[in-house]
Length: 239
Image 1: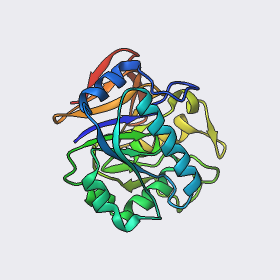
Image 2: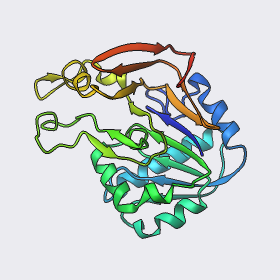
Image 3: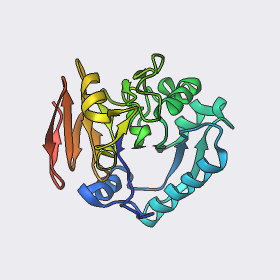
């Protein structure tokens, strides 16, 4: 399996793929010829929304030079076909959205087990990248989640990677949720005993041949502290 776990694969305010940090070039190396693609939703019953963003992703990939023999969607309409859809896909795209909502669908669909021996290419987008981890850090996002005694911040993911990712840093770094600073008061505390890698849009984690490399600006949070580990245009290999 080759995986590109992105914050966002699109350029800022653009419907096209972002070429920054060699993203398109490396994706072309991973997908040199036409294949069948599977777009996995973030919310299983928002059919019109999923159809729309899946089409946007297909158009962006085609505009960058990729071609497909088929482009299917996995959501509540065909959840019973998960294993077969995964097996025939050369590319799987994991949509962005609300992490716990998508995570619950992944578990219902049996996606972790279906992808256990997957040998194609994966593109994660935002929540899809976060839910790709073995153990997912579901950073609180919606009002009430940061103070809810029942909100689960750590969830079982797809086990595509062991690395826990947090996207859209440029958008959320100064956010306040439930009266607390999202990073300094919530995420830093949750990092005790854990390691989180934080990306702005345009950066991504590439897994290839058993090695993981961060492309572009990135930060590492561990035991309540955060430091920059990589800048735009640079790479940083995980140990």
